[in-house]
Image (tube, rainbow, N blue to C red):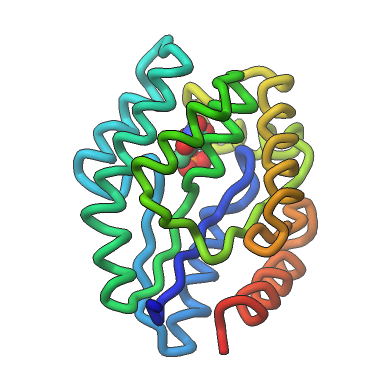
Length: 206
Ligand code: TMP
């Protein structure tokens, strides 16, 4: 049993994951944990090249999208996540496989069996210990994302797409209540961070 924990952050666009990632890292470091912060798609030099293709690559078939994120994930697990957990570090990852179910499965209608098979083959049983799902109506998140500037390929998708993404995330939270903890991202930052601290303490921090 590793002493570290594998924590993932999920949610639709503009839900404040990046701000809260820094908060989580600082909180864990203040408890004396060694923390590795990473993201998907990305997290390795090859994964970051795949991310670039993924976010800017024009029209991409849904199955190709799925294979791209899993290609990046295979490299990420082998080069970053597994070695970090084996050395008892804590890994905080901005998105992981729940995003594939939500975006490629829910958003693009890719068969969830296809995703499940890739998950089994690529992850070999590795799953997050805790997933924080930042949730709010997609209208709020898309408006926030647009305020940041030019939209990427996924941000530019329709509201119907982002609603399917949200609904799939909520479905996953219902299926895996022990692992996935919902955080109301429409609340003021202070309340969001209080909720995060509670979840971290209850699940991973002795
Ligand atoms: P973000 O991490 O900056 O939010 O951007 C990553 C984008 O990639 C986001 O729109 C969600 C998308 N994505 C997928 O569609 N499938 C995946 O498996 C992952 C990890 C991300």
